[in-house]
Image 1 (cartoon, rainbow, N blue to C red):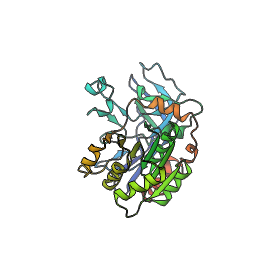
Image 2 (cartoon, helix red, strand yellow):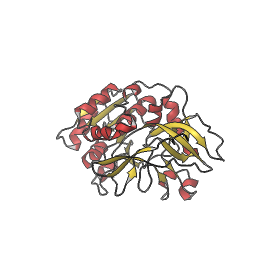
Image 3 (cartoon, rainbow, N blue to C red):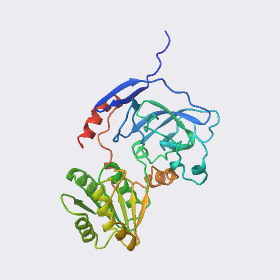
Image 4 (cartoon, helix red, strand yellow):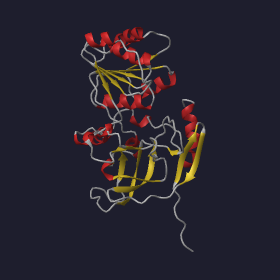
Amino acid sequence: MAAAKPENLSLVVHGPGDLRLENYPIPEPGPNEVLLKMHSVGICDFVVKKPMVLGHEASGTVVKVGSLVRHLQPGDRVAIEPGAPRETDEFCKIGRYNLSPTIFFCATPPDDGNLCRFYKHNANFCYKLPDNVTFEEGALIEPLSVGIHVLVCGAGPIGLVSLLAAKAMGAAQVVVTDLSASWLSKAKEVGADFILQISNESPQEIARKVEGLLGSKPEVTIECTGVEASIQAGIYATHSGGALVLVGLGSEMTRVPLVHTATREVDIKGVFRYCNTWPMAISISGLRVKGCEQFYFRPQCLSLDTRAVGLMTKGE
C-alpha cells in the first residue's frame, strides 16, 4: 500500500468570523525558492474580500530547495521575511523593495500567507537562524531603529516588539502607552521602564505625562496604533528635532498639528512593512534580550488556530 501523502493543513479566512481549516496542495519550489515546514506563525488582524490563508510572521525548517538555491539546504532553520519583490523595479534598485507596487507579501490579498504546514517562499528572503535563536523569536522579527529615550504608543504585539528592539539597541528608558491595562502589564513584564494607561486625556495632556515620567521629551516616538489622537499625542510628546515613526496604519485622512511639528522640526517618518532589516534583527534576537521569553502568548497547534483567533479578537 502506498504511503499517504502528508497533509498541508491551512487556516483560511472566508469572511468575518468565518475561519476554516482546509487542505491545500503541497507547493513545489521554483528555482529560486525553498519549501518550508512551518513551525511558528503569528496571528494578526485581517480584512479580506475572498478566501485567503492567514499568517505572515513566521519561521520554519527548509525541507526542499530550488535548483538555483546555494545558501540554504534541507534542515536549515529560517525566519521568513514576508515581503519579496516579484521583479527588479526602480524601488529594488535603490534598496526600498518594500515600496514596490508588485511586491509579494504574505497574507495580503491576493497573496496567501503561511499559516499552514508546508509553504514555499523566495529563498533570498529566508534567513538562517543561529542556534541560540528560537523558532518563536524568529517568527517575531520586525526590527526598528531607536533613540535614547523612546515613547511607544500602543502595547499590542508590534508595540511590544518595538519595546524589545529599543531595549536591545540601547535605549536608556522606554515608556509605553495604551488603553488596555492587561497589555500594559505585559509591556512592564517585558521591560518597559514606565507604562501609561490612557483614558480621556487630551493629546497635550498625554504628552505632559510622558515627559513627567521620562524627565524629558523622548527623542523617538514609535506610533503603533494608527489612531489620530495617539498620533497627535506622539507629535506633542516628541523632543524638538526628534522623530515620530508611524508604524500603525489608520485612516487615510488624519489631522495633525502641522505648524507645531514644523516649528519644532519633528520629523515624521513613514514605515511601510520593512526592508533590509532581517539579518540585523536576527543578530539582536541572539543577544537574549530580557523579556523576550515572556512574549510568546498561548502557542497553539494549527488544528486549534481557530480558537487562537477567537482569543485574539477578545484581546487575550
